[in-house]
Amino acid sequence: MKSFILLLFASSILFFASCAGSKKEETTASMSGMMELDLKMNGTPLSIMVPDSTKGKVEIVEQPWGATEIQVGKDFQISIEEGEGDIALMKSDIAGNDVNKFKRFVKDETTLLFWESAITAPECHFYTIVKPGTVSYVIQDIKGDVFSENAVQTMVDAAKTLKTKEAVKPNS
Image (cartoon, rainbow, N blue to C red; front, top):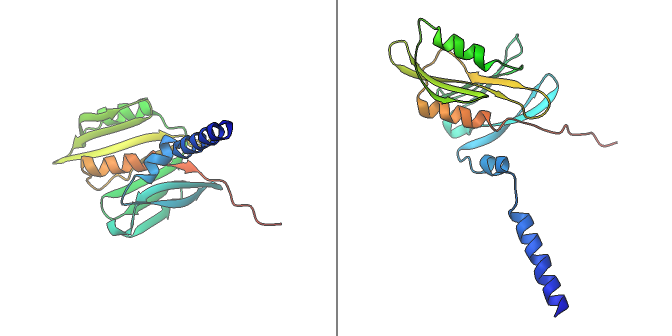
C-alpha cells in the first residue's frame, strides 16, 4: 500500500512539473505563424519571435547608430536598439507632433506606448522598453510606412518575446 501511495505521489509530482512552464514560454509557443529569430547585439545573443516566411522574406539591417531593423513583409517592421529609453519624453514627442497628429493611446503603460495618429489617414505606432536580462532595449516600429492596429499589435506581441540566449560554449 505504501509503495502504491509513493508511486501515485511521484506520478503526481511529475505530472505537475511537466505542466508548469513560464508564461513567457507558453506565449512564445502559442504564437502561431511566428518563428524564433536569433540576433546578436553588441556581443549579446538574443532571440525574438517574428512572422514566419508565409508573411514575407525576413530582412535584417544593422544600422550604423547601433539599431537592428527587422522587416517581414510590409506589415512587420521593427527597430531594436540598446538603451534605457524614455517613455515620458516619447509621450511628449507624440503629443507635440504637428504633422502626424495624435488621436488616442491604444495602450499607455509604464514600458509601452501604442498609439493612433494621422497625417491623412489613421495609422498606428508603438514604442516599448524591454529588459530581457541586465540590458534594456528600445523596440519600436520603423517610421515611414502606415500600420494598422492589428499589425502593430503583432509587433508589440513580438517585442515582448525578446530574450537573451546563453552563448554556446565551444567544446574543449
